[in-house]
Image 1 (cartoon, rainbow, N blue to C red):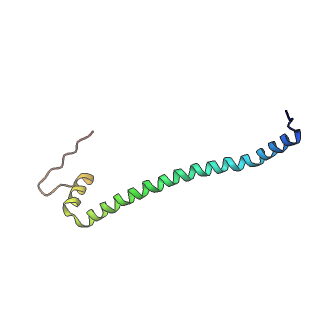
Image 2: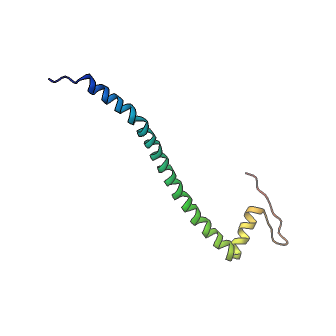
Image 3: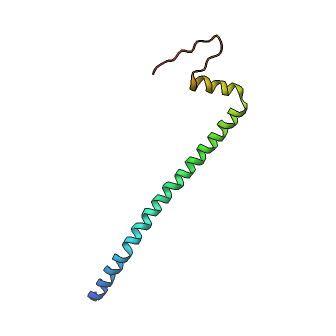
Length: 86
């Protein structure tokens, strides 16, 4: 059986110590990239949803009335708003 020379062990340890920080940084950046790609997809979906909401608010009077009633407690003339606490 052949013996491994100490010089090879030293070279292997030195190479390990040289490349380990770069590898860990690469893995951190890879994880961050995955997170950011997911965030981009989530924001794209939210953007589509908000674009649809904007179109409804620009042209659908019934929807505008519903949003005003729900979010601001607006009542029609002669109506009395009732707030329900949850």
